[in-house]
Image (cartoon, rainbow, N blue to C red; front, top):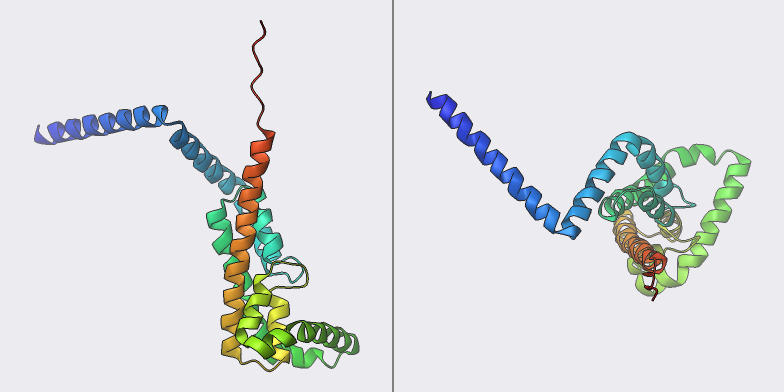
Length: 212
C-alpha cells in the first residue's frame, strides 16, 4: 500500500512538472524555437552525423581547406557553431604535431624520391619566405599571427613547415600554431554566424500591406 501511494505521488509530480514545462514552452516562442532546432539537430546528427563529421574532419585537416573549409562545411550541414568550432579547431591543431612526426619519420624516406623532393623544397621555400619577416621580428608570435589569418596559402600546415624551415623549436612552433588555430577558428566562426544571420535578415519577407 505504501509503495502504491509513493508511486502515485511520483506519477502526479512528474505529470504536473511536464504540464508546467509545456505551458512555459508554449508561451516562450524563442525557447520553443531553440528546443525545435536542438531536436532537429539531434535527429539529423543521428541520421547523417558520421558522414558530415568525417568530411568536416577531412576539410579541417587538409592543407588546402583547413578551418576556412571545415567550419563553413560543418555549419552549413547543420552542426551548431559551438560544436563545429572546437571540433574543427582541435583537428586543425593536430597539424603541428603531425607535421613534426612526419618530418622526423616518413619525410626522410620520401626525400629519396625526386619529384617529392622538388615539390617539398618548393613548398617549404614558399612557406619560409612568407614567415621570415614575422619570425625575425616576433619569433613564435609571428607564426601565430600568420596562422590566425584565414586566407588561402596561410594556416597550420604552412605555419608549421615554415617554422621548421626557419629553425623554430618544436615547443614554440606547437604553441604558435595552436594559438593561431584558436584565433583563426574564432574568426571563421564569427564570419559564418554573422553572415548567416545577415542573410536570414535580408531574406525575411516584408509584411504585405492591407488593401483598402
